[in-house]
Structure formats: C-alpha cells, structure tokens
Image (cartoon, rainbow, N blue to C red; front, side, top):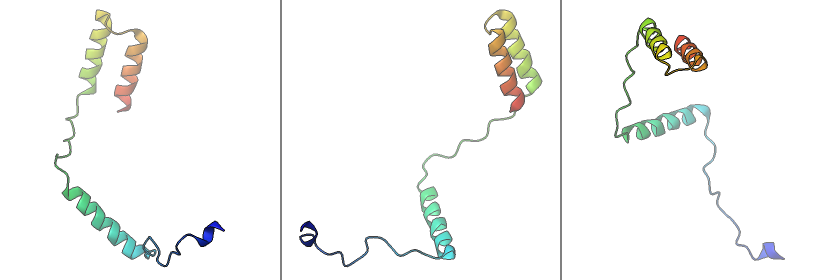
Length: 82
C-alpha cells in the first residue's frame, strides 16, 4: 500500500489560526513593512480641471472634425460623470 511508504507528518506546515485582534495587529505589521519598501512616492492627485473649459475644448475638436459625434458624446459623458 502506497500510504505506508510515505513519511508521517508530525508537524503542521502552517501556523495555528489567530484570534481577530492578533490577526489585525499582524496585518497592520505586514502592511507597515510593505509600505516601508516603497521606493516611489505615490502619484499626487492631478489638479481639478474646469469642466466648462474641457467641454469647450471638446466642442472645438468636434468642430475641427477630429472627433465624431459619438466620440464627443462619450467624452462629454465621461467628463460630466467625473
């Protein structure tokens, strides 16, 4: 029988479960270690652009023929949703 030839496992290959408080502390510790390894600063949020000016730019592109009506409508919807 094959199972007799395998060595018995007398130890568990993983740690016993922690309670929620210990697990939360462990998660915070791992997150702090991860954040300490960051080499690049997180990107700064881009400055908010005036939606009226952006709509005027889109309208100008449409008038110039660089945007179709469908592309203009989708860009306008995206701009107004953001």
